[in-house]
Image (cartoon, rainbow, N blue to C red):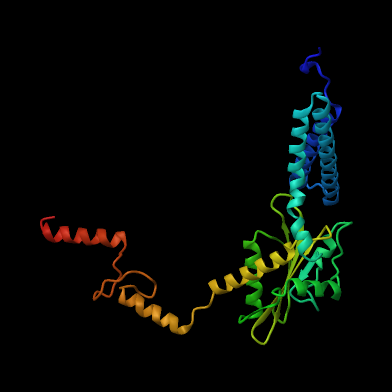
Length: 311
């Protein structure tokens, strides 16, 4: 009678585990090289596709191996289970984005102005070969955007266009975006082009912010576009919202002080014993409470001379 530990090892389970581990290592290496060593994005996307396809094949082999080991008693059940675990872990990554792919429209370019969006000038030159076109996709995709994201609309500020441009620059810097170009319009406002990289993978997406004069003060339009891919998973709309919200926050935080508020603050400082320069004053003395060290020393010496007239 042959013992169980002398049963042969299932080749399917062995190769399933090897393939699953190889695909996991391929994903890790691709992420590291693309994020840290500027691997071309098309190469990284192809490697990701290869790794996920290999994970699917490893999962299929592991299921076959598990069925064979269960029916024939050969060894390899543990390897098959390990291969299933690794493969499912890899495939869970793209599966996580499946609801967004099914529920959101297929867009790679989003703008607050769907008729005359902010143009990509410098970024159009910097886009590598094989990237998505920097040209606005047209009315058909614009209608998809308007139906899916009706809140993506221009921002109007009661500020001069030059002030609006400075607010936009500050907002982009606070978002850790890389400013590629800044073009100022003689009539006021201008165009800002920037790049944002995703945190983990380091994919580059392009952004353009246009500030133009308006009857209210200034109008701000934002355009966000993915360089690669056929579906942005809603990231461009989310980025446009984030930038607009940051501009509004900066505008609210830097509201100019009105003359009435200046008078009220001056009266408050006087009531608290503070001068116009903010230094504390002694009430009734008319001089600052904090005198210099030299003046205090001279005062002490004069006092000692009056007390010791013999010196």
